[in-house]
Image 1 (cartoon, one colour):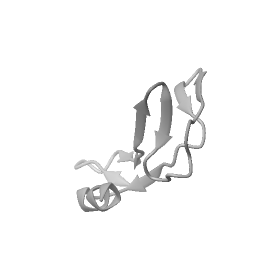
Image 2: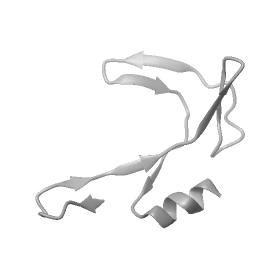
Image 3: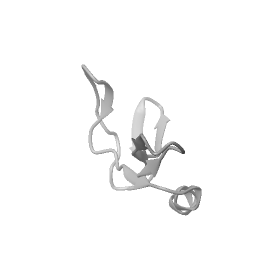
Length: 66
């Protein structure tokens, strides 16, 4: 969780990394998840089985990217 400077709000930040190539969606955080299915919901566009990790610092984001 990341808190705002005023302390009144908290934010949850998560990251996921995907590749879209030749109409195929691949999960870059979990190479076993290939050719993922794209779905539409009332909340927006969703990608089934796409790995998502919660982060709280820029260093954690960089570590995941490596």
